Length: 241
Image (tube, rainbow, N blue to C red; front, side, top):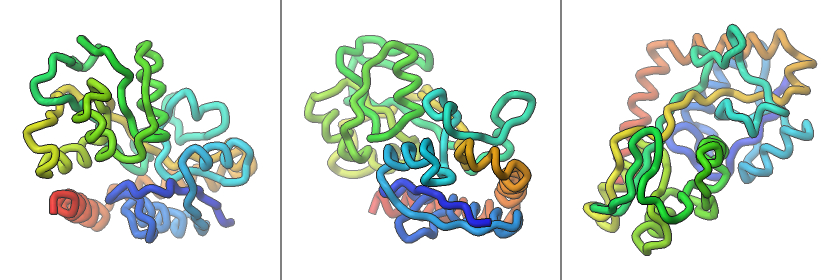
């Protein structure tokens, strides 16, 4: 059995890379081999990936958050009626960033002194869903966190929300150092899963469960954990250089 995965065309270092050697891609290949399956991947804009999974042109997405926008057409590893983080591909935090000294604040529950839509990276469905539930408008026209930081410095927004690892590395760059600061309370702290189309899961439930179980075992292995720590360190260094 071959799973056809649609992968975001933008890199998410160190988890997804255009060359296919990101840590999430490595983990999924090893898990698929253990589960008795193979993977075929192709890159596309993340919004197109979602539509192709919705209409069963693709079988899944490698790092999908468990969020309302995806639940109508995507299946996740579950336990006791809840998503099972033990079988996630990765976990990551996002932070809120503001111009240094700005009065706009995020306390972990709500924003204060926020007068503009919050900037998020294009296609960031988890953050868009959370902000919408809070009644906060978003702007996801920025393709990268770096582009959103530039908009922030230009006064086009009060807050940017983005990945912790990428954002903290960017704050070490001369163009952002001392000008933008991260607020301490995480905005999200979420697990990301191999999300499968509901059609694929319904047709192959045993294979799907074996694959999610294999992801959990492979992710816990000492070899994978060592490789992940090294990749994270190298990714942060590369963004600072």
